[in-house]
Image (cartoon, rainbow, N blue to C red):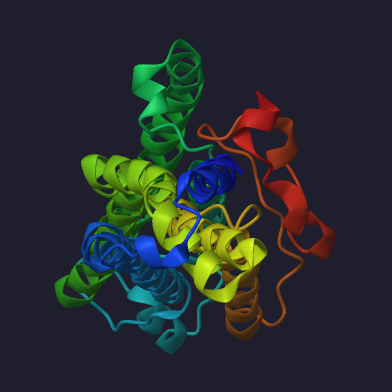
Length: 348
């Protein structure tokens, strides 16, 4: 609105100040300034912002794939008799119950309980990652340059750090301990190494998502584009006046100036909306983080559990020492509980 008002005002002023005869004055300005000072930087910035969005999508795909394979490894992988214990296959060959098994050291494990424990951690890990990624953006310039922005950042950033360190990385420690439990009962080293690779892929994807969430494109370039997209269209007021004189229509000249201002502002808005790709509830081009991490990931894991343990009871997501909210003690078999993750700022 400000850009359009400035453009219209400058056009009217120039129109009423030009000589009476249109042949005595030529108001055309070269378009090279508009092209190289605005259009080229805007195009490059859109490309950089979209590349960050694509990087975030690849990291989400890596995360979901690793989570699914990690659950399959903990719930269905089998191995033969080893020096440490019988393993799953050794127990079956000796006619023992596959649910609760005693190995040579007298230790036992409930395979369904082990799989469900892994599943709880993976689901809550995805919930925590969703809560972190959908926090309000707190890394823009105003969060450092203004009092109100700094106050907002001081509220959001500690919440994000708490979620990231305790709920995400604390959960990864517990998932790692579950792999140690399998190793203690005879899981071969090569298969344990594969599990570790998936755990590493999860943490790498999480760090890539964190970087895309907290870091913006070049601040100086965005300031340059914002200022020039606002003030350069009024600078071309004489060009719009010349169009009005040539066509004997002031409305056409003013319309050309308004369209130019709106076009430049729209290009800059494309950059602004892609700065935080995880706010799909606010922008059409954002990543639907809830659909990826809360809905689809949950459904895939439930399907895998049903196929591995077809006779098992309905899965219940249990509370543990990492998550202490009352809402976390819930039945994950109910589809309505897909709505369980809420905005962290709203919870505060």
